[in-house]
Image (cartoon, rainbow over all chains, first blue to last red; front, top):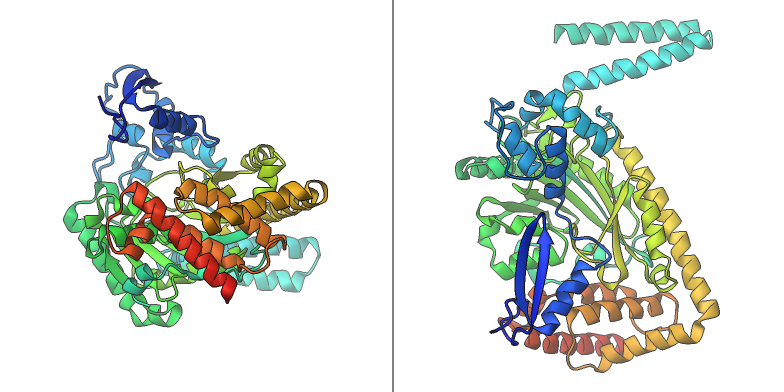
Length: 173
Length: 357
């Protein structure tokens, strides 16, 4: 019998792997067996990120981690049709709207991955107009508090007017 | 440079060894994930909708404002390239291996100088990337951000006020930003400190991976360090953190090299000399062996032990001797054994040419 990996040399080794309770046996030549084992013992574990994440989500969403998965009805994204069970299996969301439909249940996941649940970085210039204004107001409010604490009242008045102007813009949409 | 020239030329700007700290930091890369609003993410995208995304990107890069802001970029559908050409783009780090799967629905956008690229319909609709030589993360972010603004002038992104940029995988949500540096750390490996050092890094919200990304081994003592968190930190903070950790690593690697030179000089020179000898004279060479010898030789060049070989040549050889490039260079399909023979031949040729010049 030839080696299942290189299909060149005769198979002399039976390599058995148990992954997620599934047993798999490969018939290999000595060289391929050595290479595969070296890979398995390698410094970097060969973990697929999505599978790993899916496992994490599985727990988070309260699905059993072992045994056959019976998909509970669960929530479903109305925009793309992705179910919670599908998400927990793949670790990928289906569309931007999924974040809204699964929202509260995703928060612990974000907290676990990022230690955080709120974006503080870049905002798109055109499509994120409103957020940019809100962020600007927040920054001005912080400056206002600082100006008041330093008793710089003229500066504070300027800042207050700027904030009012932006808030008006926001209301007018 | 057209896409044909890109796949025919083994050299990319990120390999030219000109950036700051380029004796240890091979390259800096910044990528951001973006998605178009009102369309399913690529893994749920129908053929027609995938086409819609490609079309929208094509229109966006032809826009006048985009051209002024970013320059001329060219979109190529993955199915317009041969399998070897596609693989070469991976070997040059211009696209990820994931763009090769189900490639009928995918495309790549490249700027002439190969510094900026966009993958279309990978895990997210858009993955914008900037790759520069040496430690230039701030510059890379600046360029990616400009490319991002240029695209956003015509494309509607999936963005949420609270969560930021929405991505297929929750690990990318927020900034969608992954910044990474590729480091050559033979000193720390030789003094047996690499495990401890890299272990510490993972405690600082960073991850370490091999040369060709997720799930690959660290070949040739090359390590890729990148941020893990994308939500709740501003882009500039993520990058500043990575730069400061990289500087620490640079210090430790240099200290390890000095210690080796001081205390084990003969062994070090022997190792470098042996690597040089094998690379110059071997007739059959596997890619693993080549990678580890390249690392030793590069260390010898950086430490002044080897004087007549330019350092960037080693990085170029690392790319040139990968399987797809060998097929390209020889113009035919090669068996693994033939590849090893051609690889050795090519290395001998390149090294002796460098010596003579």
